[in-house]
Image (cartoon, rainbow, N blue to C red):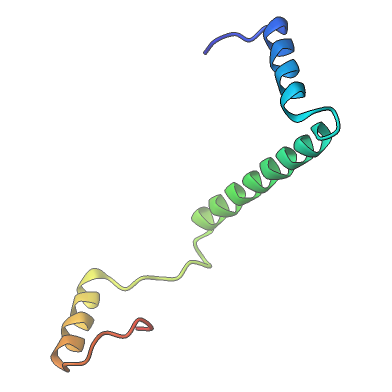
Amino acid sequence: MPNIGFPELLVIALIVLLVFGAKRLPEVGAAMGKGIREFKRSLKDVQSSIEGGADREELPPPAASRQLDQASNRSGEPKKLSQ
C-alpha cells in the first residue's frame, strides 16, 4: 500500500476544492458521511442476522422441495409464485 504524505494530501485537497468549489464542499462531506454511516449500519444488520439466525426463515430440505415440485407438475397446473 503506498504511503500518502502531506504533499500528496494537499494536492488531493486542492483538486477536490477546484472540482466541487468552496460552497459545495460541506454538502459533499455531509453526503459522504451519511453514506458511510448507512453502509456501516447495513453491515451490522447483515452481521446480526447471520449470527442470530432466529429471525431467518427456515428453508425446506432439498428432498422435500423436489417432492413439492413433482406433485405440482403432475396436476398439470403451472407453478404459482406464492408457493
